[in-house]
Amino acid sequence: MADELLIFEQTIEALFLRALHGRLTPECKARLRQAGLDVDQKLRPAYAFDAWMTFLRITAEELYPQLPLEQGTWKLGEAYIEGFRETMLGRAVLSLLRVLGPRRTLMRATQNFRAGNNYTESKLRELGPSQFELWMNEVGPYPAFTEGIIHAGLRVAGAQDIAIEMSGYDGHACTYRINWNEASVSSGVAGSGDSKAARRSGSISSL
Image (tube, rainbow, N blue to C red):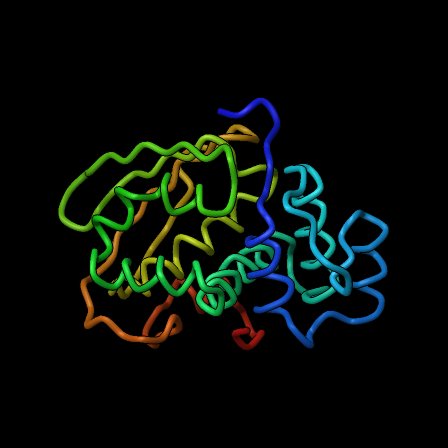
């Protein structure tokens, strides 16, 4: 893992400039600016991991004040995929996921996440048909954010009825236990019939 954990510009762009465009209030922008992110100015090439975690916390608190932080960050993870597919890199990566399918998408977790940072490492263990454990070395204090990304990415890859549970988390690394049913590949990220997504989202409509 890299000595200095960095989040690349394209990750910030996907979430804050694409997915959340028009949704950030002046209050949210002011708090982000104080924390080191000015979404109205040219982005820096990279941001420190700890700063990125602060950006996620602030945004979840501002956009979803009525939800627990876990649910708010999970929704930001799903939103990230929506924004990522609007970037040049995201269009290429998500098109590949549709071809690969859910299983091979999980096998490429390290490469997929490394498109946006310099530190992700992962290990995948197959438990059975469409049942896996995915270990990730660093998800920070908000593992639900990464869970939301995985969830949305698997839907792009053609999975449905996705269930993800954290089977181990030490404040840095996290193991996600994942299972799903195969579905017809759709061009959209969001889909119907996903009870886990409904539980996470609560009464708040999807981004």
